[in-house]
Amino acid sequence: MRIAIDARPALDARRTGVGHYARQVIRYLPAADPLPEYVAWYLHAKGLVTRRRFFKGAPSNLTEHASRFPARVFQPVSWRLGLPRLEWLLDFDALLATNFLPPATRSRGVVLVVHDLAYERFPETAPQMDARWRRRFARWLRRSAGVIVPSHSAKADLLDGHDVDASRVHVIPHGAEPFDAPSSKEVERVRERFGIDGPYALFVGGIEPRKNLHGLVEGFRRAGADAHLVVAGGPVRWLPEAAARLRSAVEALPAEVGRRVVLTGYVSERDKRALIAGAAALAYPSLYEGFGFPVLEGFAAGVPVLTSNVSSMPEVAGDAALLVDPHDPDRIAEGLVRLLEDEALRARLRKAGRLRVAAYTWGEAALRTAEVLRAAAGRG
Image 1 (tube, helix red, strand yellow):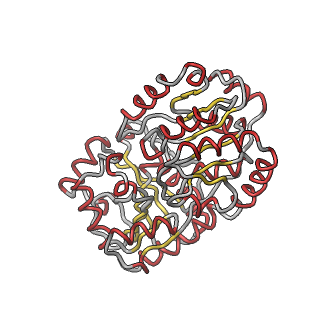
Image 2 (spheres, rainbow, N blue to C red):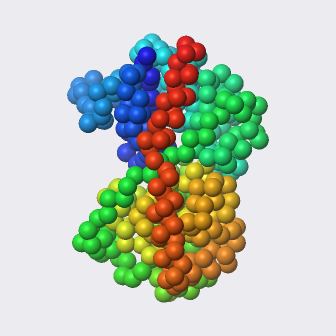
Image 3 (spheres, rainbow, N blue to C red):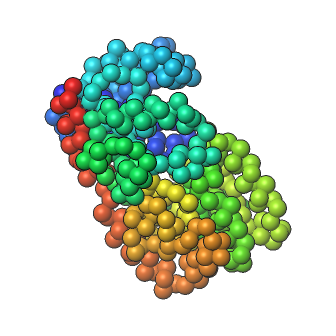
């Protein structure tokens, strides 16, 4: 049995949640399910000159297969013409489509990973998912051997808007990595680099409207706390202008507030860990998430978390985070003040977060994903 994984999101130089998911699945699936052969498939036009392995140290039952096409050519041609089909490029019995849609294929063993339904809830934030993409997605929901979603909330959203058999939709939560705490010297390094000279609340993620950064900034203004707000993230490829709008909103703040809002741009994993480790709180009042990786990152690091009381966030966070109405800046402000000033609350949430995050493991996610893929391979 040979199972292919669409590894393209894992190679994105500026990975967000989908890329992080793809990378972890490639790392854990072969170890969790050692009998099949797994193959990480991706595009690597430069490999015509220099061959390179991207997943070194992987289990022996994982191989890599690079198709020597430029991504900017392959994707539009593949979607428009349905060629080349993936089965022309490699043999496989099942395929894990890690980013909603698979490459062109006639295989009956495709499993879709649907991370969220944000493109339906907030269509203005997902211009890349146009009418043609939506028709293709609807066809694949009918055709696929199975669908994986990361939360019961995402499953409810999918079933609410699409005619798909509920028994074919599998809720498999993502995992959390143990937090590799950086040294105090590392934390001080990023503080100096970004000009953070006091306690701070931290947001981590791509800058796009549904992340509710304008609401977070307004909540921070109303909080009047003697702290900084650090936004660690860069523009997303599908809506780059959102970052410029956020910067304009920060520049319009009163000077004494604006100087305490730090926009770092995209940060490396090393800098992100140091920023999380040094934060007094992690603030993630998103309007909509299919899962919400940063919530678990805060838990794993022992940082008190503020997040939203909508979509998947209450499901993921349980009682280990302070939940607020993301549509109400006053509630965000009150939550920030409580997290920054109430030490008893901070201690309770740190303890609850560490207990909560222990339930989310990539090993378990990989085992359950392997079961779905094995069933899909039987259809081929």
